Image (cartoon, rainbow, N blue to C red):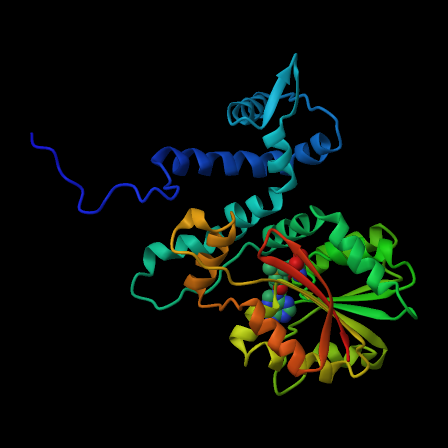
Length: 334
Ligand SMILES: C[S@@+](CC[C@H](N)C(=O)[O-])C[C@H]1O[C@@H](n2cnc3c(N)ncnc32)[C@H](O)[C@@H]1O
């Protein structure tokens, strides 16, 4: 047998993945999400240990030990340093492993297509995104404090998912009323039931519908006291609406028309970061970029956001960065 010479150099030297990383990473991702569904990370991050009681739970715990995320103490398990990091960042894992899997799966049948439609598990994306928000409580705190500044008003969250952010912010800005709108009626129905159960439905209302500005206003808008809305916020949706529509400024202008008394905007989104090799970007950025590239949803640069804000007379009062590319801006009018 003669050795086959690879056509291209095997290693770029820039952090190539090995076959082991690919296979074991996938399994580790599944174990992380299952452990989250059992409430393990919340327990572990609060400083407690866990004690699996079934064979399956035991196998998952041992898998997490072998991955370096847990250590065993007798029949109980506790977090390692890396496990702490994984638990804090489990929202990213959920979005990538469960939320976006239906989109990536379509690639197999789609080599001839220019783009594939985003096909997500909406409940998984909602929960993952809320967990991503919760990992940086000081950012939620800063937004909540901004909402609590000045006379109390009404804050609308456009694309609110499971209302996780709204609930957290309602606990900080205690005089503010909130309205959340999302296109996924199942996610909204589940979130509304939770709000009622927690007795939060007097200050927080949720509606199902699209927040994409169109020539005809959406039906839900007619049921809202538009003049009462003083802050509009939107997290991790503007890039998509801007891409489907006519750019960032056009979407923001549409929201300003809907809510004529806006005095504050809070916009969180993933900014475009690019690099030729996977490992040159911060983790999750390449996944985020590739997911959007295959669905044809554009990502926008920081300059593009800031140009649109300035064009419409909004000034950035605070910029809060999480994970380099996830940026929240608190804006007020000039
Ligand atoms: C990436 S998630 C972000 C969720 C949440 N804003 C957060 O950051 O935690 C995008 C959300 O926008 C919702 N969405 C997508 N298109 C929408 C539209 N046209 N109108 C309203 N909501 C939409 C999705 O259902 C999903 O809940």
